[in-house]
Amino acid sequence: MLDALTVATAVAALALAAWCGWAAYRDQPTKDWHFIGMAVVTLLTLVQLVVGIVQLARGEKPEQGTTIFVSYLIGAFACVPAAGFMSLAERTRWGSITVAAGGVVLAVLQVRLYDIWGG
Image (cartoon, rainbow, N blue to C red):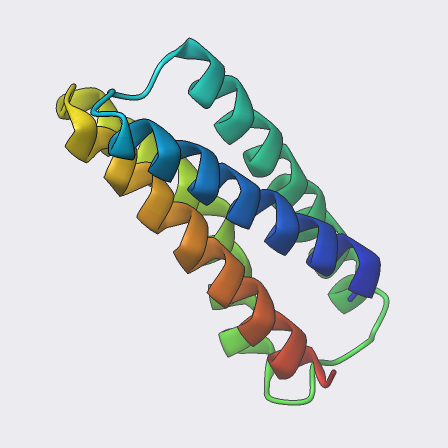
């Protein structure tokens, strides 16, 4: 895996979590600019998914197994969009809290992906 991409994705996810947490603290639902932030974080996870699949196709192997690695890659890619869709269903501060939680979960998944790859 690309360590810089993993760190960038984790930092972006935590920034999104802080931003949406601040909105929840101010009793605001997710707004359009939050969805732009979610799109940026999702784009980073898409790049990470592609890089991971390319590395597997080139013959590189994660230390803890390919199946669990691919599962975590797909879960990381789906984490923020799922939280975003859930926030659309809850147009209160709880929608912002959901996205904030999704950002924290994504950051944890990044640490776990790094560990699975052998970091």
